[in-house]
Amino acid sequence: MTSSRERMSVAEFASLVALLTSLIALSIDAMLPALPQIAADLAVGNPNDAQLVIGLFLLGNAFGQLFFGPLSDTFGRKPVIVAGLSLFLVGCAVSVFAESFSMLLLGRVLQGVGASGPRTVTMSMVRDLYSGRSMAQIMSISMSIFILVPMLAPALGQAIMLLMGWRYIFGTFILFGVLGLLWLLLRQPETLADGNRRPLRPAAIANGFVIVCRSRAALGYSLAIGTMFGAFIGFLSSIQQIFHDVFGVGKWFPYLFGLLAVFLGVASFLNSRIVMRFGMQKIVRLAMACSPVVSLMYLLICLLVNDPGLIAFMVWGALCFFGVGLCVGNINALAMEPLGEIAGLGAAVVGFFTSSVAVLVGIPLGRAYDGTQIPLIAGFIVLGLMGLILVHWAGHEKPSNNEK
Image (cartoon, rainbow, N blue to C red; front, side):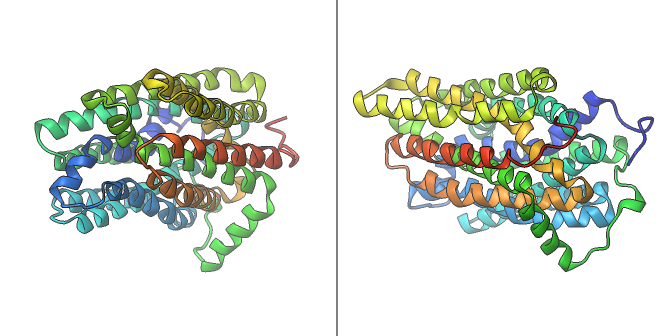
């Protein structure tokens, strides 16, 4: 572990973490306005198939985490993040020059695998340097900065698409990837001491799964994150179609999406201010109840009123986003808290569980779009209840001293 003298300031470190992890959100949200044009240019028959531009990126991201975490425990955090960023940039280049939908999807898988490196290993870097509520505070500060991406990315993607074409959106990804690479190389010291490195053995991954599965907190919170993110994968996959087909918002889509993201950012910032006082578990339990309760109420409104309108949908989305904003920094910290001795491998296994569950439930939820918002709302109810049950189950494990 680096000494306090060698560390970047909390603000700079949180900003670097935000940039490296925001590549995932940028790679998703900036593509949303371009999905119809991609489907038209690359002759995609079924409109729902265009959602695979999002889904396969996330699939690659899920499986990539299994490799980068163990590698970072052996070779250190920095070189593994560099390798992930390099693969991400290769995937972006493939997508820029893709002449078929299949080739574009290949590029998206490579981007997903590559982006999983920074996503997984930066969590390990945070765990190397911080623990307990301090770790949750860093994650929440990072999320407050990170949230600018979903607020701005759809508008950025739409502007680039209209001015230069959708392929240039991937050029923006390349610029951000290079910026993160240079910032990491020039400013961030290695956080994993030589004495804490572990030999790379195939059995280590299996052992990591065993350790996570034996920890009620690590397993339960990981699966809970998966159900929460699964609902939002369904949301992200189908939101462009819902705004266009159901509400007819046209070019207002990125601005409405950005408005929803504001509530995620406000909640993340609020959490960074209150987590040290109230603790992670209390906040997570209350916030996780928000999505299923609000979604059930909105579903009843939709069934009773023929057309509740755009404002009602925005209120529902804002409340759900707010609940996620309160949860995400805390619940990641709670999942990682028992895994300090295997931070890199632990982050990989937690990330794999989280992303696998999210992709397995989120892609079908998005593809269930039938021209109405009903399947999405019903999915939020079911997945929200599952997540709430998992959080209460995970919370019965004895908390660490940092959480008491």
